[in-house]
Length: 102
Image (cartoon, rainbow, N blue to C red; front, side, top):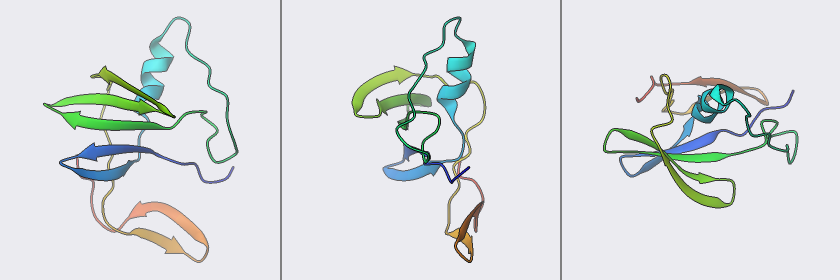
């Protein structure tokens, strides 16, 4: 499997990559979950979300090319890595030089 694009999150006016997928746990909780089509091998889950933390709520503000606002979908912890990605040759490791932010 090739590397997958991440969701993004806006926190305190700065954009970060999100190392967790908050929408996945919500979709799994539905009786009839949505099924997304994968546009390419770099996005096998079929969607790319943009999130924002505002007033201690997790908001899904964009899903693909559609602007939406759905509040407080998180059912667990968020992992927002900060710092430079650690590279090993051509491979980007899913580790960062600093600790998580939130």
